[in-house]
Length: 382
Image (cartoon, rainbow, N blue to C red; front, side):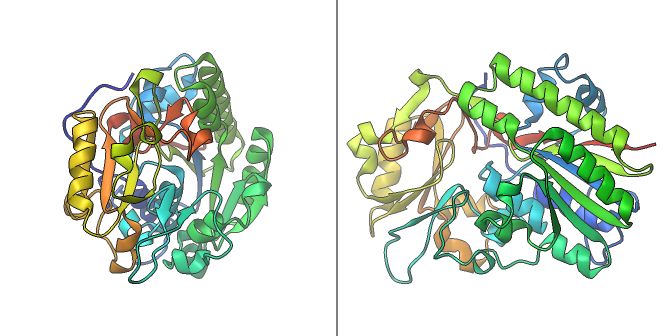
């Protein structure tokens, strides 16, 4: 169970966060002008296994279910993922080597700004919107494009349904995409692709752990059994990859199980809707887009209702404290006028507006250790 914390776990952008991992990988492969804050040694082949929902605290709590990964974790340290601690934002940070404020993928649901107008539409980053150009929404050059320009072969290996999506195009365009719908296919395709050329970088994505946690909870037996599959996947990759390949294993966020008693339903509390034009984000990382002149009243109302179970701050305060890293002016309007991040095992749901999301057991997004910390586990295949 997540414990209540008084101070947010601020992301360590550029030092020990997902953006730093991305640039350090490029630097170790010889891509010029890339910072290497994690001090990775030079290498010809790298495989990054990205396990959706693999939190550091969850992994450390289940050594019996994941003996291979747990042994690697004994001499490892965690990374922070960035805010919000959610897949779209984390993929943006990994895919560009930049913090969220620089790549603009600032949450699960963020406002599509209209100059001079109150925001009236949300972009769901996982479902996307045909009217939003993914390349313009996220204009930074990706690590795959930078690798390719430097003569490093970039490869992405993931289920075929993710190829060509708006989020995929925005965050990770530029690499060769190899579709793999099972764990066995992920291993075989990664091994074959990396054996075929060097220097090369392969990102392998596995999403079933996160899906299990959302539906059944990260404290469930089902999640623990799924973690065992992740452990076997990582062990098989370490056995199958070409000799000398460096395998890194990380996650895009942690997860928190939230009980019914700890869910605050915006749709059942009219005072939380007053002055809010759009309710964005997700249950553990809310963007509130306010009607003109209502920001102060919205902050006061939300602080009164939520009390000490969440950090409720204005946009300027969140930016000044470094929640998003340095923010490009082009992306300012995508950030809520008010940001709400639970500091314990609490969720701000919207049962009518978001019935599917509101029914989830395992959630993520905030600035607690449980949301923010993910492992960075490394092994050189020998």
